[in-house]
Length: 247
Image 1 (cartoon, rainbow, N blue to C red):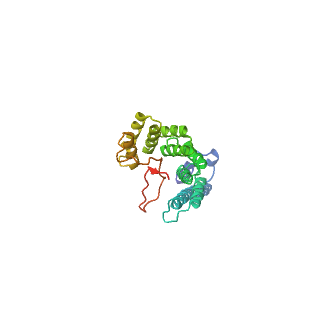
Image 2: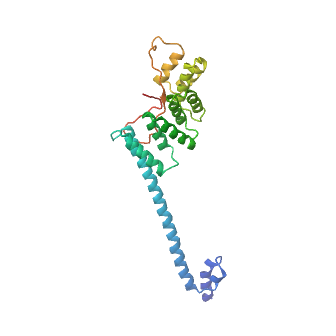
């Protein structure tokens, strides 16, 4: 009985593989098990190393992006627009699907008055994320700087239609309405901006001007407002407001 039970115990693991295995001696199956075990562990190791490489690549992308921001903002590094631009481009090449590096690169072009590059880069952001309210708003400021006021107005309006509209878009839209003499539309837009950011000085000034309270603010400068950077740095006490005057 024991001689019959031993083979059956050995063969049962291979019943679903092939009939040929059912006629092999038990020792052959032990060698097959060893080969299969090595192959299986090799596959597991290969997957493990692939995960390590992927994680390492993600950390490398993040490091490049963070370093670009340091040079862009002058955090623990001297401000260096050329280095920031180079590093943002490297971050994009490493992770083409990312929109953050593109957004910051576009912002860099905007403040450098490289408007064609800024516009193209903001459009790239919007192709990948059509709900980026900041990108719509900032592209509007680029067009306005280029004298394309009608296009800018459409973009500000589009920014207010996103799932999470930025207050700056309402402000810029209100400013254009006010300049065009559309006081009712201007008031509605600036009141939405103030409701979202009640302590924003630029919004308060325009709101007062729209309401006709110019006694104290007759000399107030009403300027464009651009969305803030995408900042992922931790520490350093860096606070960037979404609303920011363009020089």
